[in-house]
Image (tube, rainbow, N blue to C red):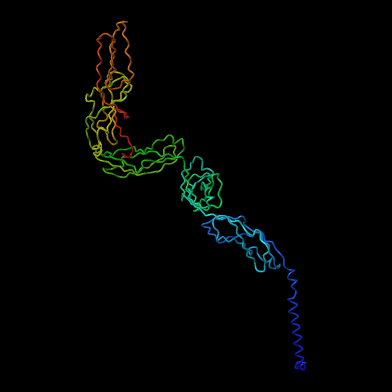
Amino acid sequence: MDKWMKNNNFNKILALVFGIILWTIVHVDTEPTNQTTVNTQTKIIENVKIEQTGLDEEKYVYSFDAESVRLEVSGKNSDLNFKFSDDYKVTLDLSDVEPGDTTLPLNYTLPKGVKFESMDPSEVNVHVELRNTRTFPVTLITSGAPAEGYKLGTAVINPADVEVTLPASELSKVTTVQGTIELDGENETFTEKRMRLAAYDSSGNEISGAVIEPATVAVELPITLPYKTLPLDVSFTGQLPGSLVLSRVTPEMDTVTVYGSEEALAGLSSYDAVLDLSTVQSAGTQQVKLELAPPEGIAKIEPTAMNVSVSAAEIAERTMDNIPIKLEGVASGLTAVVTDPAAKAISLTLAGAPTLLDQLDQDNISVVADVGGLSAGVHQVSLQISMPRFISMVNSSQPKIVTIDLQAPATPAATVSPDTGIAPTPEPSSEAVSGGETSVEPTHSPEPSGTATPEPAEDVPESSSTPAGSGNTTNTGGNGGT
């Protein structure tokens, strides 16, 4: 063998044989082009989503007449069957589109080794609009109901207004932006931190695609029993020490709110808080805490307590003269005259805090003689005296009596007619007779008569319409802010 290997001709022949073998191997492996053609096949890719690029979505809104396409591709079996659908891309370039309608071609991207055959549709009609924004108030609607007997208060929505962005053609349809709260027997304030909002048209249909900013709002919906706000009156119990008198009582609030049934609330017109005067120890101003309890039949009251500023001072006296007496209740056809006292005025000695006494004048005091229901004649009438709160009358237990003369109008004497000898009846006056000066015009006969015209009644002081109390008490009523 070594002999052959050392032979140069033998080596040349051997090299030629190996070359022929190698050439045959190479050409036999690459020759069968018909086999590649046989393995190529087509495939249909359904519902390939169209992706848009290049549009400024903060400025524009778009729509087109197709959302996906049908792709037909071809390739070797291994390339077609081992590629995911997501590897097939169809895009729509909107970077140069202006508002309006236009038709644009679709672009595609295929996996490696896959050949494009067809696409349906290959182009789409595009509508582009500018986005518009408007501000709308948020409306709250409720479904369901609170607990029996409870009522819904006014909701607090934060923020109260939101912005809605839509194409101009859609934005004009928006009438309300609202959220919904579902109630199921709640008996206390309902709180929702993220209530979702939606835009609706005039028919109550939700408008899809509306961009609402913010998309949710916070809501606080009061749920309470029926309630009523009442004025606060402060009354008193106990006594002030020594010779102290009240000069001012001022609660920090002048109203309270009570909660209960409609029937219980209907019978309330004010709330009376009681202040114990024995808690006031000295002259000056101090704060007193009042506990407020709900009236009978009322579930709760707000506030349940409040501070009251109470001012007290050493008692002083002041005499006021020439306070006019006012007449009330004079019957029609009668004239009232105060005959005693002749001055038709009285003097009163009053007691109270010095600062209050210094502020008094005749306009602050009402002295009334009520003659309602009395007939003509002379009557003794008790005066009704009213004065500001915290002012009292010295010797108030002694009634003030005045004498009132109620006079009927004088009737003129009748004259005899010369023709008939019968005295005619005077024509009655068409005007009612008041408490002022009264005169009656006599009937004239053809001949002189001895009938005299009645004397006019004395002037009567102007009557007051101010309500008055009893004759032996002083009215110190008023609210707690006096």
